Image 1 (cartoon, one colour):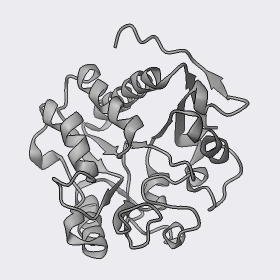
Image 2: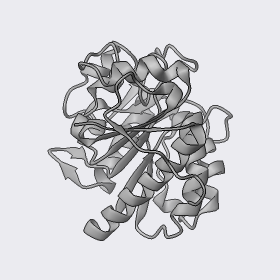
Image 3: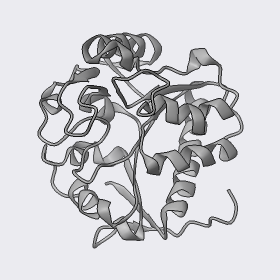
Image 4: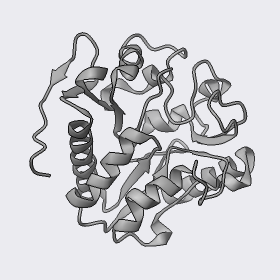
Length: 248
């Protein structure tokens, strides 16, 4: 069953998410000696990354990956890597070789192929799929996650697809690179974050019957934690927990 946590506001969601990320990474390091963290873009994850600097002081054994990227250079204002670098990666003791960015400047196909190779070389595989420890995801008002959009052909890429090129994103820029649905479903834990009333319908759809009309609904429910604020909360939450934002 999906674990749904509702907190009071966006700051409380960010605090909760940072704690959850840290706990999953620490558990992975204890059990396997390495922890694979996947970052996404978006305003809600962004604040969580800032707080993660404080709640996870020890970064030994952590490998950082990305859920998707726009086909731009790493210094471009639209780059997910640039945001993650500014908010998190530049502020923690993490060697450059343990940060695996998607090379958006290579374009959708070559960038996706290069990232597929990197994941298969750097992460334990289960039937050819890399098994990542914790994937941080935002959700769009249309229910998309990473760069997997409603009814897109990428949702039908199959169980062996790892990383995909996107040429027709409904949000600019149109060209992107994204992890496949199969990789997201294979992850040990996905955290789906949402705040504001503009995301309420998307969250309701994500928790309803699985459908390609709402890509987030296709995530593996028993490995999914959804963290929302009151404004984004669906009508009947599964679990209610109130964050204590006073101390990280």
